[in-house]
Image (tube, rainbow, N blue to C red):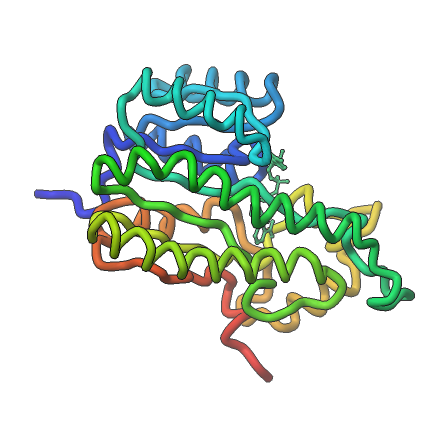
Length: 270
Ligand SMILES: NC(=O)c1ccc[n+]([C@@H]2O[C@H](COP(=O)([O-])OP(=O)(O)OC[C@H]3O[C@@H](n4cnc5c(N)ncnc54)[C@H](O)[C@@H]3O)[C@@H](O)[C@H]2O)c1
């Protein structure tokens, strides 16, 4: 029987691949028979993850790049095309909030550090736009490909304190919708661009916002959970089903969409 969700032999490029959410994506898609390109800044972590995949019998290659470094990304593109000759899926996962871009509870918008605000927009927005422009060239030649951007709940509803992060992720959603039209109208209906909007997952980038140094939940965490019908944070593995759907031909008529994965946070009022 044909497996609608098959990703076997697809070349899947993942940025921010050694992060808390990126790592399970790499392991999952390799286990599903995809060839996974691990794009990451940290050499040791990238090589380690590549080894882990290979030890489990999968195929992966680590390519070192900062998502804001055009030359490094071009180099990754060339090496990837030499190695696999195609790129089927791009998951723009690199991103995150930055401590300096968060407004502390005792401060206001007038205290916003514009430098940090700019950096968080650079990473989340330009760190999505640049890899898209580079890796999707193969997709336009193939007339087929799926780009999946990692937005956030904060793109849909501004969350207190993380002003820059929310603005940047909202722009990622807008860019997703823009690219849906741009690619399909110019290169055909094989090209799809979607986003996922994860709710709250406890990871390094939000650890100080969500937990106290002793590991207990902050007041912010308690407020989040009170507003989440499932009353818990998500587990990184809970993103994989939606990603597999968007990466595979099962979603062949889906483009420009934002899939919310949040235990009901976005839908819930009182
Ligand atoms: N954790 C959550 O609750 C949550 C919720 C919604 C969205 N997200 C998004 O999910 C994605 C993954 O985040 P995570 O929670 O795994 O955090 P993480 O910090 O563990 O992973 C982010 C990864 O991006 C990498 N990265 C950062 N800057 C980079 C750069 N300039 N070039 C290349 N790589 C860079 C980091 O090294 C890290 O490996 C991010 O886009 C984040 O905004 C996370």
